[in-house]
Image (cartoon, rainbow, N blue to C red):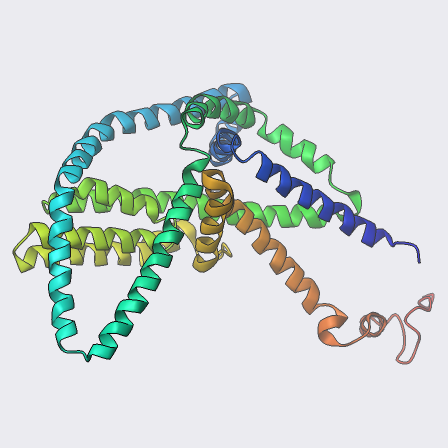
Amino acid sequence: MAETHAGRQIRFWLVGLVVGVVLIWLLRGMLLPFVAGMAIAYLLDPVADRLEGFGLPRLAATCVVLLIFVVVVVLCILLLVPLIQQQVTQLIESLPAIITWARDETMQRVRSLMAALPPDDIERLRGAASEYVGTLVGWGADFIKNLFSGGAALFGLVSLLFITPVVAFYLLRDWDRMVATLDGWLPREHAEVVREQLRAVDRTLAGFVRGQATVCLALGAFYALAMTAVGLNFGLVIGLIAGILSFIPYVGTVVGFGASVGVALFQFHDLWREGLVVALYILGHLLEGYVLTPKLVGDKVGLHPVWVMFALLAGGSLFGFTGVLLAVPVAAVIGVLVRFGLRQYLASSYYTGVPPEEVLREDLVQEGLVTPGTDAGAPPPVP
């Protein structure tokens, strides 16, 4: 039997997908500046379009937007790096004392717990703890090694600093032209369906990435200022880390809360100060969940928090930091395609159990084009 046209199309796109994944895997060590430049261009394209709408040429709009972006980044680095460096130095100097205190406190609690347990239960707990701790440490070490293996080398850092701005400039300047070119390459038979799915991907990415980035900045500023205001040591560093990690749902809050409470227990000896740190993190979590995320991200982006966490961890494990940058766009594309496929399935005979010709006949009957019992393949009556 000759291969159908639909079968050839499916085979063509599957082969293209496999080739694309293999190329990303083979080139993952040098893709970081290009992926970062593409991400910057995508984030800044709406601003450039707005300036272009005001009558500014595309080249001038690109230069203005990138110049403002670079100036803001440089100012943030110049203002924050000295403070962060100072607190990181203090943290490194205080880390042995903090670890010793945490170990002593933990051992004291463990001894109290073990004194109340039978010997058999103690041995089982020791064996289980050793097994699970070793497994978790191994996973963490592998993830961190894979995450930074492609971007922590000196060449990767230099390329990120010098190649990314150039890539971002050219992509931002030619963004609309590239979109029009790619649109011209779409298969004409399915062009409108593909455009609809791409628009859904764009809405998902715009809603999540741009919105979530704003949420991270707001939370980082809130936590850093709040922890510094209450006098918590290393509050600026902990707050900024909590804000950055908030891009991964719930991770930023958990890490920031654990680090802040741990430092507060070590530093303060007043219950009200420790309670104030806890209250500020609860306030930040409520602010994120009930104000920032609904207003800036919304609930219609179609990216479940668990799916985002899985995508980020999988991307980091497979492709390093480049995979982390690609994780959310790939997750958005997969989510849109899965929802599209589910809609097609629910409208098909595989779900309804009704053959396609029966569905066609019922539609024609409802429109009055054929009478009940008439063959659906027969030509409709001439009015």
